[in-house]
Image (tube, rainbow, N blue to C red; front, side):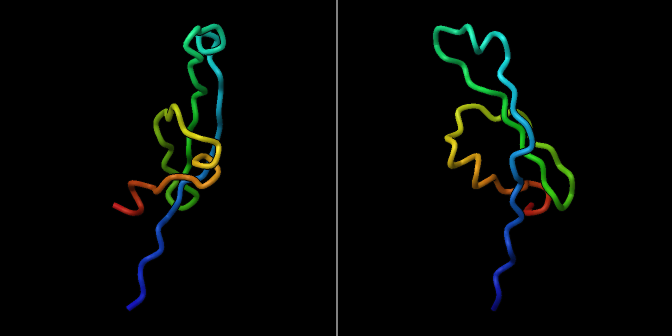
Length: 64
């Protein structure tokens, strides 16, 4: 039996808000992911490691 492939959302854009740049706590960048299959754009994701951003995240719509 073949397993269904997981659709992965890839890194789309990132921005560093002014408040995060000046934050004494080091606030993070605003990372968004986009699914290449259905076009779903994720909400903001904070605190991801560079390797997690490179791997991507599963699409909740396609894999739902």
